[in-house]
Amino acid sequence: LYSADSCTSTMVRMSVLADALKSLNNAEKAGKRQVLIRPCSKVIVKYLQVMQRHGYIGEFEIVDDHRGGKIVVELIGRLNKCGVISPRFDLKLGSIEQWTNNLLPSRQFGYIVMTTSLGIMDHEEARRKSTGGKILGFFY
Image 1 (cartoon, rainbow, N blue to C red):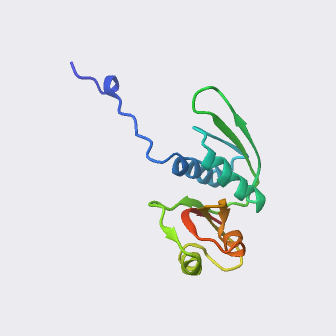
Image 2: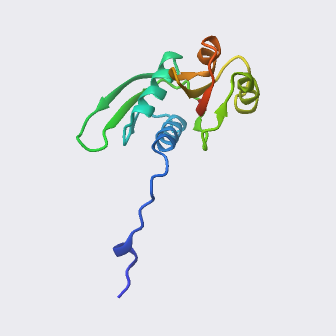
């Protein structure tokens, strides 16, 4: 006999970073004070450090549970939207301006996060260090 709950289909995680940013977004929209992100990855941690440096999120704590790891992020209600850009397009130094116009609501605020040979940073830091890279995502 066929029953629906015996073969529950589980979603396959395509991108851990996309999942993390989506749960950040949803928790912020719901007005939560903190959010649990799992699994944890080095890229997520670096991305969160960039967000924290610009004051969009509060403290975050990495919980190592010998599985995928978890991160508990304190929200301060400043984040409007964050998202991931997939595929990770190449971002030349000259084309950063074009991408910021397309993705961010205004020139005054918001950041594009990119991965460069010098590490994961926002587009302004990449411009200061005059390096290009691949685009990870954005937040504002």
